[in-house]
Amino acid sequence: MLGGENEAMSTIPGFNQIQFEGFCMFIDQGLTEELSMFPKIEDTDHEIEFQLFVERYQLVEPLIKERNAVYESLTYSSELYVSAGLIWKTSRDMQEQTILIGNIPLMNSLGTSIVNGIYRIVINQILQSPGIYYRSELDHNRISVYTGTIISDWGGRSELEIDRKARIWARVSRKQKISILVLSSAMGSNLREILDNVYYPEIFLFYQQFACVGGDPVFSESLCKELQKKFFQQKCELGRIGRRNMNRRLNLAIPQNNTFLLPRDILAAADHLIGLKFGMGTLDDMNHFKNKRIHSVGDLLQDQFGLSLVRLENVVRGTICGAIRHKLIPTPQNLVTSTPLTTTFESFFGLHPLSQVLDRTNPLTQIVHGRKLSYLGPGGLTGRTASFRIQDIHPSHYGRICPIDTSEGINVGLIGSLAIHARMGHWGSLESPFYEISERSAGLRLLYLSPGRDEYYMLAAGNSLALNQDIQEKQVVPARYRQEFLTIAWERVHLRSIFFPSNIFLLELPSFLLLNIMMRIEL
Image 1 (spheres, rainbow, N blue to C red):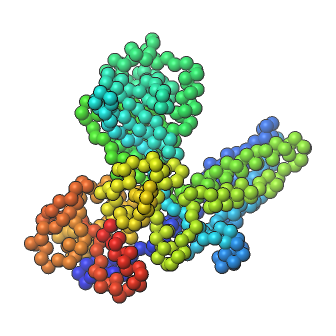
Image 2 (cartoon, helix red, strand yellow):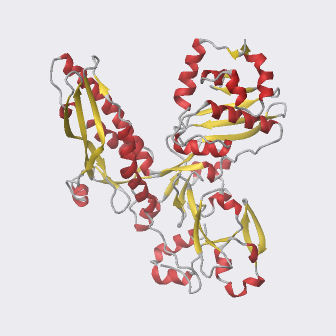
Image 3 (cartoon, helix red, strand yellow):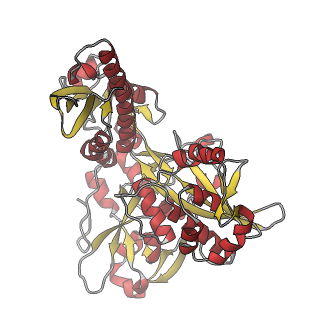
């Protein structure tokens, strides 16, 4: 507990908090979400149906202790049991059993997992948040070309662009593009629905002569199959974060549970492109932290758990067909094997680039390793493809990522460390704490702001106000506003960052931690 006599008390959060929160999210929500998507499996004659009952599953206490797992080169894990049922449709009989579907590695008090006797840490990944982003580039004639990039929940990208004649195209691949009318029609909209859901119907009517015959767009069956393969199946799942971002960016009111790309999204995105063409609307800064999300250890484990259930589905389907073919009577117990789940997690911890052997050189390196954030990894960037702007320090990093502690060489700026007081928000964003300054309140109220929200406030550095509270009336303090640094009177300050007097650190923290923490305290 740190703080001065005249300011609010604040506690340094647990250094492994982001790891614990991610793993708890996987156990509390991720398991249920993935199990609920496990389909009902039928044999080819539709006589037998297999299903999992999501509401009845349990993780049992590990059979071994952490210390023994290290000494015996074993995995510190828990067995996952799920209730499963086998239904005979002809007689309506059901056989229900509690079955073991595999072992899930657990997280220990260090925020790590013990796999085959080795301490391993899963690095949190920084990804582009799903949604739509607009940018402008100059073509070979030095004319601005506006594009809107739609990013799916799985990282797939598709682009909408508007040319000099105000014609809007959807780019399916690098060499192939189709008109927006053809795309909307392939998604199930007719011309009347298109015109009723856009702000600029006259532009679509003008464009109609280039892409349609007899009122509605005409496209071949082969083109429709190509769209299904390259566009809809791979690039249309936005997820809950993508749906939220799409609604906020395009001012839509589509329900949050509708996580797939809709014709209304495409038409609203085209409307915004037209507005940009005529000088209305704003472009996006894709490097701003409000357009990033943290792919936490919980998200990574949930992805692997979902992959293992897909493999388990294939095993169960094949076993049912084999049992029927050989005229055997199957049971839920002999249909399910723990191999898919166990091997999937072993492969993840052993081969995935974000799963690393814990650096145990000293206690400080263990803490720092667990707080790493990386742009690298599957779905992310590489050291050779990352631009200089991504590797540079962005104003939105303030209070969220330490700009000092980063890798050297080709990966500089792509691997960093979490700021000491930053935390992960509900939507995967990094939130930074501030004290609210109010004349009506004697105390200080702590607020956590996500990237983008803090741009609406005048933010002062905590050390400047905290050390000079007696002469604030005469102060002119440095502050931030909308990513710009300026100097203003203290009366205009809305929030200030957290500051701790250095003498408290000398009393309560070991010397080897002091230097590392002091470098992050205002970052």
